[in-house]
Length: 324
Length: 256
Image (cartoon, rainbow over all chains, first blue to last red; front, top):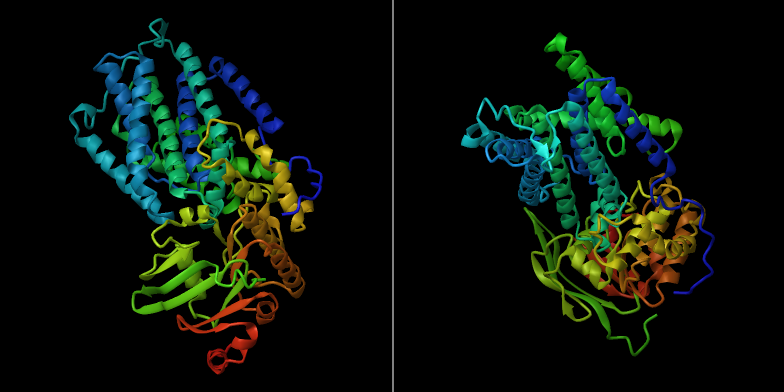
């Protein structure tokens, strides 16, 4: 092949590295979250952060891997159970309880993922849902999950032996640090050589195969990463609320996290955070409306599908013509 | 293109290639031999089994019977990705670009194969900018330099095909399989892509399925005619176009 003089490279022909506005948004969010617990109830904010991480984990799989899992509650829930159990019954410190919970989700993700990625599209979603239902019934029957009662009064313990997490505000900043770490990890995965291949597979799987990429391995890898991060969110959540229960593994939890991701904007970096904040905010502040919250959620979902399919952040991203 | 010495140098061959779907036989005992350095065309009426043949040769479909050899090596049992790694790269009938990646990134994803597998999710994608210059040169070669930063999904149809060829070429394939490279193209694009294919055919072998017979006549060294899943005739354009069975198959199928 003749080597011609290369034409000049147009600026930003390849979307390489973190665009400056991403860094700006990131720091702005961090600043808000540093001030927020002095204005709003810290436990509510911790819940928002757990679900923001959970939704971001799903978004990694759905928005960047093109795989719709309808059973992500399994990883969130199993991690919650394991971290609650090890903290309460084994008396492990919080850092180990969270670690073990997350690891359990990773192993479960590897097992389910290895089977689920053999199917595509709606069948993939159905397989993930079916396995999540099995995890649900396992959680209902297994002796150590506490059945209908769940695992209650989980001690938060002392982080590294000296940081007392019983104080909500202390725990808040620990959760903020972990969730920030999780978000940065997701951001890096998306903007890595691996992430590039992932986006190619999302865009056109047969073409990726024809270029020599073993697509199943990439799909399994991202599935395990997503399950692991969902598990991290679940493990923290168990310690925040000092409770792991069937709600965490129920299919409605899987649906809710999909809803958060779609509402915020799938395939965007910041969408799942917004989606989680909106849904959890509604559940919290409209709690007095009882069952009507679910109706309201449904209506918001219908409106978002009809009017702004790209989600809240997706629409903003289109307005300012920059990926968010 | 084939010299006398290379006349019997077969790069890709198939013996008794057969694909049975429930209830019918799409490809039935096809023998095929593609000479190194040639442009070989696979033609035939609609439903003749050309694309199925392509899918079998690249293992996107599992053959029911038969053997495929590449450079003398039996590749019948390999996976599609493994065949691609040997240097057999295919294109698709519908344009196969990555719509949400930029034009440059499309080509770069092929160049990225040079670093082997990319499971390094902890590293910044900045390491990929080492491929940017090469990618841009290749984008420029197919006349898309002005669109390097555009999302591939926004390109016109003809430009998508050009990008697809640039992406395939980035892997420096020994053998390129092009599935209807001219499908759905305007006359102007046909001339452009035709010239591009001729240019890239130096040093490599091309097997293509194509409906546009003037393109086939113009480009190919050798032609295999398929009808109802079987080889009807093989030879140069002059030979097959004069073949009574070929004429009957085309007219009988109501083609053109």
